[in-house]
Structures are given as structure tokens and as C-alpha cells.
Length: 71
Image (cartoon, rainbow, N blue to C red; front, side, top):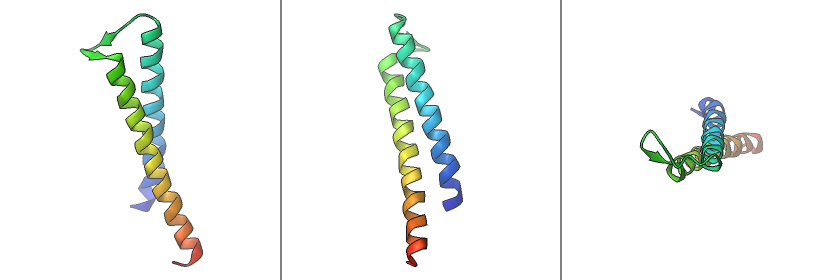
């Protein structure tokens, strides 16, 4: 399970970042909705993806630190 956290965290972070970037650029271009979703909703989904990625990477980091400390 610990080995999956690193790629999962990176993937979630990158996807979340690109969703935020796309929704921000679309909002600046004057597009307020796409596929029935408002840009704010997509921005929040992107932020959620980045937060999930951070939590996965944090879990991986703390587990590695525990192993290095001998616990």
C-alpha cells in the first residue's frame, strides 16, 4: 500500500493542478460553465485533487520517516 501512495499522490496533484489551471483560464476567457458545471465547481474539484495528493505524499513521507527511525 505504501508503494502506491507516491504515484497516486503525484497523479492526483498533477490532475488537480491542471483542472485548476484549465478552470482559471476558462474563467478569464469569459466562459462561466462547461459540460453543465460552473468554473468554481471545477476549481474546487482541482483543489480537492491537490489536497488529496498532498495527503498521500505526506503519508508516504511519514511512513518512510518511521521506518528510518526504527519504529
